[in-house]
Image (cartoon, rainbow, N blue to C red; front, top):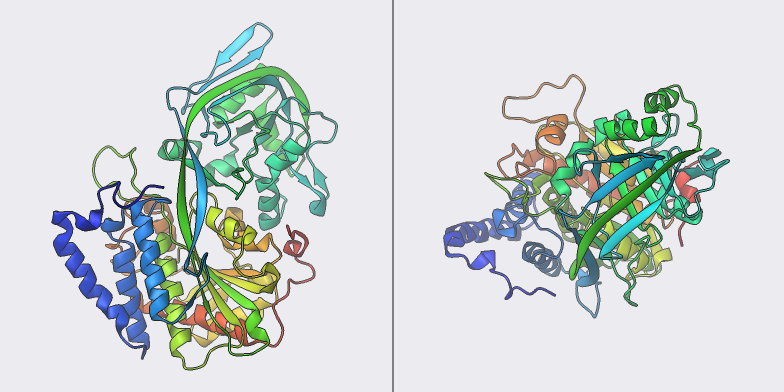
Length: 552
């Protein structure tokens, strides 16, 4: 474990002294008694000013800045009278992680068909990720194309019909068939590696598609290539879901994918056309072999979830829990940026979510009436590494898993304009839908359907870790109206995602609207309180796909 004394602590740097004083003054605002919407807005701003400050260096998992943020949250819990619910009687649930960093000079990839051989260029044509299982990753084998690599019994779909990938390298398209429902399809796409492992594949080559390229361009691999890949480690020291059966894997750009298919005498453009037409790509042996190799270095670190309980007032129902979650981490400092600001402060992502949860807790604790069920506040780490903190908690809960009745997750509310409508991801899947709609209307806003189903948001944030355990969940975010007029100083959600998401510009000089932030707090607090006071626990709707995927 790296301690505060092994690194230069930014809080002790002389040139930060005046800034620290300013922060301490601002955080005094947080001790203001709860009295009004305006006070919520001020307290929210004070939380943001600390959590998204340069002093915390982007709150990367395992960093000093993230430790400071976690201690800040634990202190806020204690001030509100929220009981510790971490390990050993404290607020912290510490997680051991194994990390791997890619040796950027090591990746090599070649394709062979008879006497023809093709070398691919790293980061221009192919990319790889560090391997947490081995220092030297190498695979050689025949290629078998298996469409999207999906086996989806719920949707009566299987990409593996008629082919054998045992001992072979599976070639797959990134994403899912266009006709798949967004969220269900994304769940199956996320489990495709397990489907290939179950069938004996020893390697994977994933090819970008035009649809995925619009959502997440292959070129963006350069932005993250130097970042550690981490997985949590169980008490026995084994990497959780490390997929060691896959000896090496790579992803290809569209152009490189076309070269691979051409080498096999196939036409990737025709495959793309099939997908657009709603047809299933034909799985087939490609009569091409590949060699993929790269090296990684390994390290270990640890990082905490912060967990607290506001005990319920009902003698029976207090043993059930409404889980409120938000992720505390961000992506730290960007070494790939040559000049200028390198600190990814993560103001919207996710200091805003943490601040929302803290103020929800403040409103509930200061209301004078505790809800019937207990409120389980879980601030999770390593969301940016693959939902790892929430996944660890879902597999190692500090209360009985079956006693958690619902999850309300807070992640990246974009608070840069005077929005008046919300998207309730997951609201259509459970009985919480009515509660969510009523709370939204009561606070002067509207609930709208998901306007961007292609993004599959419901399975991309921490609520997904709990959904997979059978727990109904919801995740609210602000939404711009299609014809919304923005003031000169405002930024739309769409502009934020393009210009500021996962960039150093996601910082405190954004035009943050703390008035609507307070409304957002009130809506989420009302939802949590209503669920906690309801006679019956929330249930999945009978026709919801997510009622079928309990991993317990």
